[in-house]
Length: 259
Length: 220
Image (cartoon, rainbow over all chains, first blue to last red; front, top):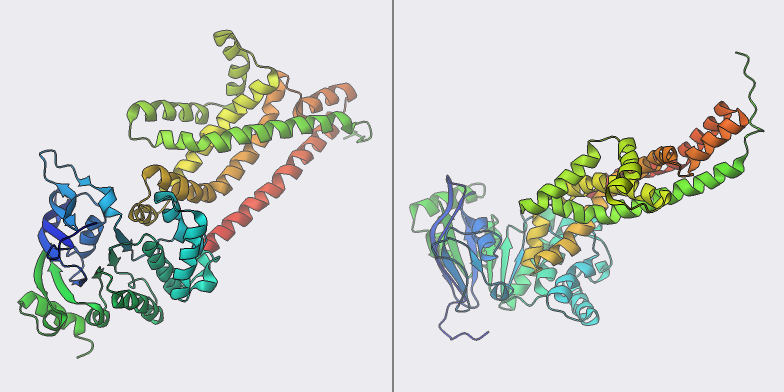
């Protein structure tokens, strides 16, 4: 994919999304993400954070708006028929990890990793297996290649899920509350893996409730509430000295325990 | 009661031959039911009414009429209406197989609908197309989840095979009826036959129980 130096990696334009006639989740969202940025999206539940990621992955239809990746529009709903058009070729450059472990329970760890490369990209099994094994070693899961998801801890499952997404060489990773379902002592091992990716300049958009993690990984923080971007800036500003009243209230509440 | 039991006069040869026929009917009907039940389940879940409605009608016909009526209908009405008769064994297999296919389709449908949404989301996020998601995620997950019901239905069909005796398929029940008439020993014959049906069915029902407990452990 070619992209000019100044072009944004992701450009989201006036995105509207509702569930049924009464629940408007996204109300005209505009976000531009530059290459190499690590955007953390925070905000109250129901504010549209997870919906935003699901829309970017093409898992939800939209009412109107458009999203482009690397200068190419790949999701749009602008015609009169309001049909969500998704360019799956472009979408394939994006990887996603979910809150609930979504490993396929009938496949072993290594089979989970090679399924998409072999079926979607037609990669030879031997080559995919070799790459998968190397990736598992890197994440400290080399010995688990032949284990089944039911035999893994929550933290191990999430690390495998991250490795599985990386097998397709994504140019952008989406993390949707990936540590929310984990026992507290397992959170760090998953966050370490994401920090490791960040160190290699993987662009990512992360939805999280873990403010320590947000502070550590973000190059930019977006506070999203009521379906719109309320505040957008560097982590020191949004998490440390927010300009908007609504952001401040939210940050105060979240950090309440520590103060 | 002055009845004196005499198991000696019941000869096992014909019963054994009958059991083989019964098992053949069971295996063949299960092959049809297990294999074709899945595509049928996909048809009854189709969003396209001209596909969905005939498939649902097929399933409901077999679920809502007695098996014995279906078998009789197959043996007497199909040859008269369509001028085909494929031999009593084949007709028996078809009647039982289509019946099982309808019941298994319902088992598959329930299991397909129980495949977590997140699994499919992950499949989409990995770029799998709808056919690949069906083959590599839905099919294996749903088949596994429906194994206990498939086994229960399968063992049900094993018992239902006794019905084909009335249309002269020489299964276990047919042989038993013949033997009972010849030896005047109905109590002994049918007791033995009941025990044979039980001896085959009981272990399978135990396996079903075991699988269900194991599955609950896996899912917890």
